[in-house]
Every structure is written in structure tokens, then in C-alpha cells.
Length: 314
Ligand SMILES: [Mg+2]
Image 1 (cartoon, rainbow, N blue to C red):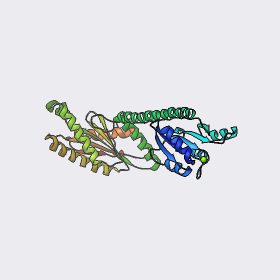
Image 2 (cartoon, rainbow, N blue to C red):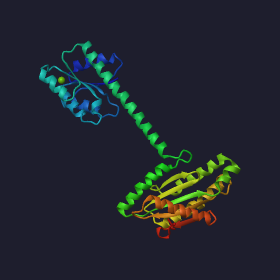
Image 3 (cartoon, rainbow, N blue to C red):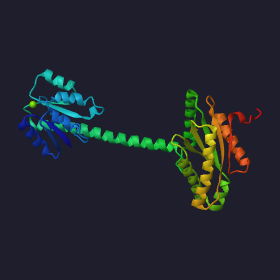
């Protein structure tokens, strides 16, 4: 294990280094408080420390006090070594953050045993840190999986709904418009039936890739269901969304032809989200627009503004 030995007395320092070098530890020796502190700034510095109390530059007790103020300050195991042997000295050193206190002259066996206690504590922290790292990684994976569509890598419907609610409340606060695009691949069942599901999956992936390559970073694209996709475009007027949908329509058909030699198209319904609107009527309006695009012969973009919404008799 890495051990920092900071001791200004040369003979004492050599002896300490010798004791622990024999145990295959990696020793970092410091001749005074400044050097010890410099070592503690290095990226992979020791967590097990034997510090002389009285040293030029910085005392061992000052060092431990400052170390404890670090974010990971609790991970250090610090033994203060000193010839000061009054009870109040021991109490003071422990109160400043030392884990243990050994008076000089020390018995080698006792010091080794006390350092071994430190090894166990430092090893425990290392295990704990590694477990925490794995847990953080696992959590990131879980939340990515929970928000992602497996086939296309786009967001899933669940994530999109949350993002839509957030965008709607942000838009309301800042009086900003946003836009929504719903897209549906035309006659997709035929692709699956005539060319197989692998080919169908490839077409879905091509659509997703085209989407990603066409939208801005702040836009949110999701797979809404089967061959249906949805796009949220913050700070975008209806006409801007319509232009984007048209670009998508052309690019997708082109990409599909290039990569699969199939003539697959998509229909798009576009609508705006005005400040103060709820998600349900907006989604319904985008759906209406998409329906109209299908009705108009597919492979086209239809947009419906709020004022043009068809009000179904209730
Ligand atoms: Mg000293």
C-alpha cells in the first residue's frame, strides 16, 4: 500500500522508511510539512499517512486538519507521531482529525500493528469507492435503458412525454413557442411482409439516423410506437417545423433508396405548441395533421395551426 512518511528528523525518517519498505509498501518520504503537502496534491497520492507533529513548514496536525476539509477527507488514515506525550496533546491531535497517535520513541511492533489498522480502513474506503463507481455506472445504464428505444437508440415514448411536459411548462414561463412533428412510415407493413422484419428494422434505423442527422441538439426525437416517430422542437415556429419536416421527408426517402434500394416514404403532421397549451390537445392536433397527410396521398407534410384545429363535436 502507498504510505506517506513525513518526518523532519533524518534518522527517524530512515528508520520508518526501512520498517515499511520491508513490507512491500510503496513509500513516499517527505522531509518537512511542505513536501508532505506537495505529495498530497499529486493525483495518486497515499491515503495512509504517518506524520510527525512538529516539522518545518506545516505541522502534522495542520496537515490532517486541512486534509479533512477535502471532499474525500474522510478517506485518509492519519497517524500522528510525536514526542509530545501529554494527554491534552493526544486529545488535540485526535480532535484535529488524526485517526491515531503514537508517541516517540515508538515500539516497531506496535507501530506496525497500528499501521495495519490503517491499511484495513483505507482498503475499506477503496472497496467502497469502487462499489460506488460501479453503482453510478449501473444507474446511468438503467436510466439510459429506461429512456431509450432499443432498436433505434432514440428516446422512447415515456421519456418523450416527460420532455414534452417540461417543454410546455418552460414555454409557459417564458412565453415561447415550440413545435411538434409526428411522422409515420408509409405502408410499412408491406416492407415487413415483402422483405422481412430485418429489412423493416433496417428501415426504422435509417429513419432514426436521418432524424438525428437533421435535428438540432436541443430538439428531442423519439420513437412513438411501431413505425411512428415524434419530434419536439423548442423555440420553433410552425413554419420552421414544416421546413424541417419537409427536409426529413426528402432525406429519408433518399437514404432509404441508397441503403436498401427500397422506395419507402414517410408522412408528417406538424403543429405548434403555444404558451399555455396542454400536451393532450397538442398531440391530438399533430395526429390530425398526420392523418390529413395520409389522407392526401402520403409522402407529404401537413401542418395544422392551433386556430385551424378541427373541433370534433363532443
Ligand atoms: Mg519533528
